[in-house]
Image 1 (cartoon, rainbow over the protein chains, first blue to last red):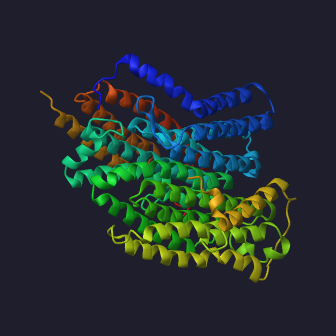
Image 2: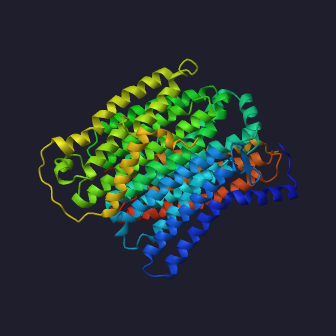
Image 3: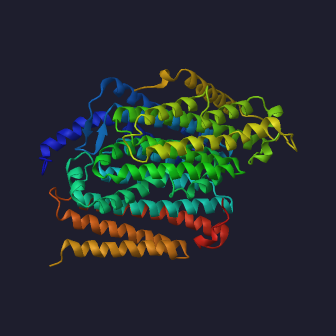
Length: 491
Length: 101
């Protein structure tokens, strides 16, 4: 560890780092541009939408170009603030891909569009959140970690409370913000001790591990638990999941779809880099992660069985999937861990966004919000209903969909480690049992759509072609990626 | 001579008071004040640790960022609480119990 960088060296480091930071600059410029357009032009809704989508596409292209240049060697940018390698870029591309789909979804969401102040402010908040998300994926420093998590959190508080006409929406928004602020305050307190024990803010400094070997394991575990509280809030694993069903149910459907996928990609991409080194330092760390995984899967899947509301059901199902993903973090090998994580997150994102889109469509057109109202839909709607069934099959993890491939990959990589890692076998058994349990609630949806007699259904509004198109594309993607998974494995 | 332990002790007391306020208060603004206490405990910790850091100003810099971010998140929190007050005419988080299950 250099005790003090001399100024010439650190300036040079900053200047060379700038060229790797193009996408973040693009998003910053887009963010400012959207504010300015919204201020000075009236009725600029369409222009703002195109500016936002152009920003995201350009950022993705910039990363794609870097992917060709950088192979496997890791770089530390801005004097150790950011990490830059092909894994980081892969996760960033996935996050940008999911957010571009989400953006189209926001644009179609009736609830957001009918807001009296318009949707333009929402796009600015969204872009700010995306910037925090990208810096979170690559952060290699405790300061950067806290900054980006807060950027993402503040953006998501505002996104959940953006439409607030009803009492319940205001309630969900308040619960979310109070819970989130508490969780990040606890995380900050943990981070200060991480700094105090090791004397460095840099996560890739050897001191941090040397220090953790010296202090007693109780305080090490306590500090790591505190840090996990803030991260766990973003991932909504048990016991930090209380906000999830409320916020997902009351937020506009597009926002729930965004929250359930994109921040999870970012936080998992960061967490896997945090967990891998700490496993060897604190013996209990993999036990903590595994027990959190087991409890999360149990709570998410058991609670989902009792849900009547479709969005609440998907919220609990996303908690269950978080538990499943957490299991992957104990894999000892970095490269298989990140590639499996990437593939599972990819599968989960396209499936979940597709499911939320179908639900938003049904809510718009038939005013369907609960399971009971789905009865007899199969005869009325011949496009969205089968697609929704495909998404449910994929969320359960049955062939020939991408969900099956993702679960298969996870199980096959974990099953060979059962002797090496304590507690892995019972958690794997829980995973299998909860997957079986999830059949009950996921297949309730096709059961209601096709096999139950309709009570009353009124076609309310005309259909939206863009929704039709995107849901169809996502359903086809789910099946193609399930049959030929190798196409989508970047690493 | 005030040692590092004194600072850490004060910070721990502040943090516990903050958590106590978050759990027990029946007023969302007071909950926000509790969160602010927890953040201030972390700021005190950071500055105290930074005194013993080999690189100068690392912890102090972190503390400055934390102050700015705390202000931002409290502003957002106040807006959302105000909105809740407009709809429900109360800011008691315990009254926000319509969503369950």
